[in-house]
Length: 128
Image (cartoon, rainbow, N blue to C red; front, side):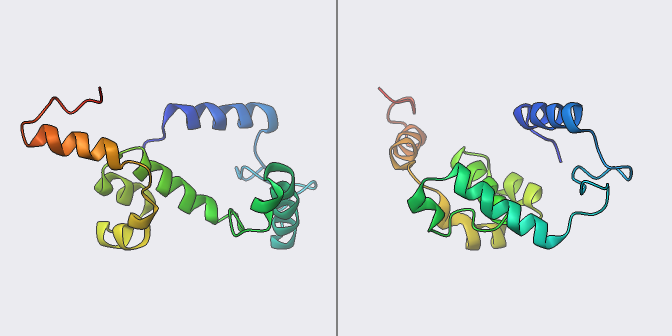
């Protein structure tokens, strides 16, 4: 899958600063071994407490590292990436994608109204 340039830059910066484990993994323990699940959990909990507001910490927002996958897919949909492309990048069928994520699309009602109006021949589809 293609990676958007801002994410490529972040990955390159990470590799430049930290390198990889001997086997190519991005993250390794202090001794170069596989990071234990308990360590991931502990660090994730601490990171959430540093990065989020107190009311967010007590919510389910990014409760597990896996939740970032949902955030990424939701962000792609909210950015207007077509559902088939999002599904392909996420490893889903379009049916599964829409069943799970359609409710995550938020705040685009006015823009969609402009696009529908333009499609119906009224206006040029842009906001005033």
